[in-house]
Amino acid sequence: MENKHLQLWAAVLLLVGGLVHLIPALYTSLQNLTGGQPWLQIVVGILSVVVSLVIFAGDKE
Image (tube, rainbow, N blue to C red; front, top):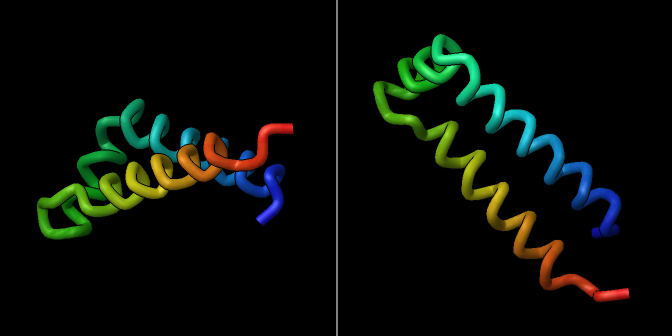
């Protein structure tokens, strides 16, 4: 995957994670949607870590 695509995904994941934590009602709604567990937030966090590790481990030009 091209580095620009990874940077776009990183920005999107950062935006989604930030909005979820910025708006308490959104966080609670997502948590209630998954039966009281913050699974969607956990998945976004895991994806953010994976994308950032791939960017850091990518070719250094």
